[in-house]
Length: 159
Length: 159
Image 1 (cartoon, chains in turn cyan, red):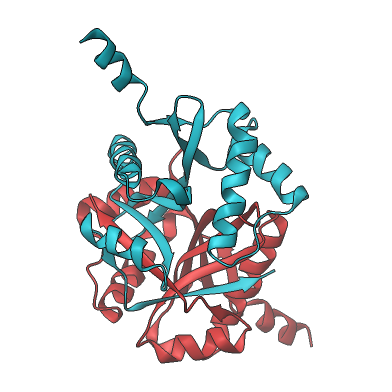
Image 2 (cartoon, rainbow over the protein chains, first blue to last red; image 1 turned 45 degrees about the horizontal axis):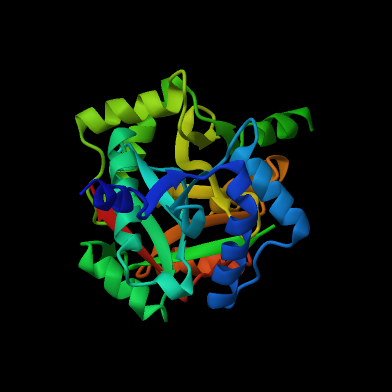
């Protein structure tokens, strides 16, 4: 009985990322970039990213899914804002779970925590973007009750 | 000659919004909400919005287009973040120009200033969203060299 309890305590936990997690997180970020067929951060960008996450003035927040010492996934978020709602939005910049551990409930664990954080911070919404061919992720987002902002088109100016 | 110069100085200028501009800005926000067929801020949200703009810990930045004392439009922005770029993004939450003064170059004035601010702050991108039926705005965004993020779908969880 006691052993069973200890086993359970070793299961997957969502935690705030620590500096010592960074190398493993960077591997996952590169895995995400490859999966999305996008350019991930190069060496200089990775260094900036470390500073923006763990430096004196963090620009983003990072969560990791840990099983013992192993890191199975990460989520990056920051606060944006809705002027019509006049409330903060929790914007989820990245969420990624390593290939071999998909569909095991880790995504749900992340979202439960993110919603908790968003409520604690007084946010009115959680928002994020997904590539339109990522049908597994989209199925998951629909299942948890999220709504696609289908009539909005996002625009970018690269500086 | 001197008079001409003075006339020019009275032309449209992009300025940081001030507390005393708020009532007029609120009228414009309501005009935008009606234009977008969306729910604008109610009385309580408007009060929160004032605090989030002009309070001790502002969550957003606001610019206005002024012609003398008249306010012809506004833009609301904040900083978001790109993890792959490892740089801040200037996110333009709202840009609106009053109906009677569209297509007179005010949008360009706003974007010139926003790009200047984004560069000053070390942002890698300027991003925003537009309703897909707002073809005049879309034509303008294409003209200034912006790219639609067509293969991304945005999702929302309302809390």
